[in-house]
Structures are given as C-alpha cells and as structure tokens.
Image 1 (tube, rainbow, N blue to C red):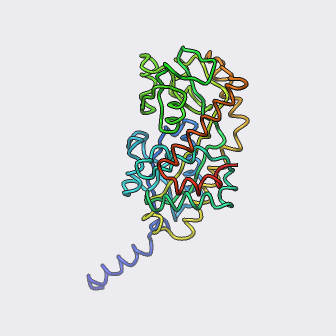
Image 2: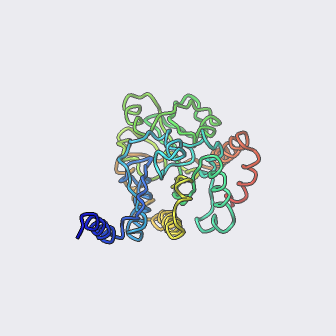
Image 3: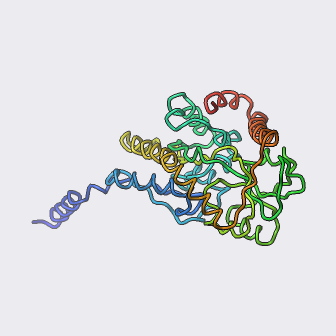
Length: 321
C-alpha cells in the first residue's frame, strides 16, 4: 500500500479510536472558601453531581483554594479567566451593586424559581456580571455578631471595632460600630492581635478558621441569611449543549436544597461546637431584640435602595415574605 494511503488509513483508524470523552467540556471553578469548610461544600457537591452524571459531556474542575483572591473572583468569572465561581453576592458588588440582596432572601429555592425571583436575579447577573446563575444556596442559615471579649446588653455597638464584609456594613454602622474590611484568611490574625473586637459570621462554623479560640460571645438572635451563588461565565454557558445546561441547573438546585436538608442537624452541631469552645450566648430580649432585628433589615434594604432603587423595588417582594 502506498505510503500516503497508509498514513490516511492510520489517521482514520486513530480518529475512529478516539474515546467518547474527546468532546467532553471541562469547566474550571473557584471557591470563595476552602472546599472542606461548610460554605465551601456546596460547590463540591455541585461538582460531584456534574462529574458523575456528565461523564463524556461536561466536567467541573475546582482549582486550589486561594488561586484568585475573593474580591477578584467576580472579574475572573466575568472575563472568562475561570468558567465557574462560587461566591456570595457581597463580593461582586463592584460589578452589580444590588448583588448583595441575596442576604435578604426569605424564600426557599423552589419558591424563588417559581415566583420569578431567581429569573430576575439571573437577568441582572447576565447584564452586569456576564454570568449565568445556577445556584443561590445557604439560606436559611443566619448571621450573628461574634465578640472577642467585650460584652453588650443592648442593640448598640458604639466603641466596637468589627470586621465586616459588605453584608453587614450598613447594619453595623447603624448600631454605631466602627467597621474594618478584612479578607476571611486574615481574620484569625486580627482577632489574635486584638485589632478587631469582633466580627460577623454565620451560625455555622467559626472553628475551621480557628476563630473560636478568640471568641467569647455570640449575640442572638441571628439576622439575614447566608446566600452563596454558583455562577457560570455567560459566554461559556452559551457554548454548552442543552443537556449540559440542564445538568448544571439541576446540580445547582440540589446544592441549594442541600443546606435546607441539613439545617436542623447542622444548627445543633455548631451551637454545641461553639459552647464546647467556651463561646457564651448573649440573648437580646424585648425592645432591644426588636430594635436589633428591625435595624438590620431597615439598614439592609435602605443601603440597596441607595445603590439601585429601581431593581431593589422589583426584587423586594420576590425575595421577602
């Protein structure tokens, strides 16, 4: 057989021998917390579902934690540096100021998808962040104020220096607190050195970062709700086949619902963990309790209205009860 025909036959044989996974799309992903921390787990669960059901079609590869700083993750997924990011809306307000509205969600994942709230959030992220949302997870886990060694007995943070993310910025200011913006990885050092008097964080998991060692008090009741998001670069999303999109959406919904399924068990676990670490509970009562909660939500909605009055007005009835 002539050499040219041999080469052609070899090429054809090689092409026919290619495995089905040759067309498999691999999506890179980043997580705003380590994969083994409780609010880093939803991305892992999402990826596990996709990787199990999407073999030969689509796979998710989570990059090592810290590859991209949390405040730069929005730009990274917007520009396609990575395909997927799991990051709360509070960290992408430079791109979409109203993104932090997710902390005020009081609807279940199914309700959000049925009443148009999810669709509106997604449309805004399409326009401003160049991403498709496939998951809004975490609610109804509340945030709390944690204090290093100074105690309060009323809804007043005057004289306290507190580490914040933008989630609690308006609330802590409304209570008279002095705020300090510090990345999660730097909070332990700030607590150890006494640079801050406390911080805001969900009820779940202050131990993974070592914060429990320098936390004497948790203030009850909780306020707002944790809401992380899993977002896919919109340009990449448009390239996916319908079956792959359906799988990502289904995996995202399962990640959303996963937190609800675990809530009672996890609440009890982390309350005990904090108690075992010596964290004492300050429970505000009566008028001070009412003032505390009212101030939280009034300040949260007011801040968003200042940033984007039109869309805040549309979102409020869909996300609130």
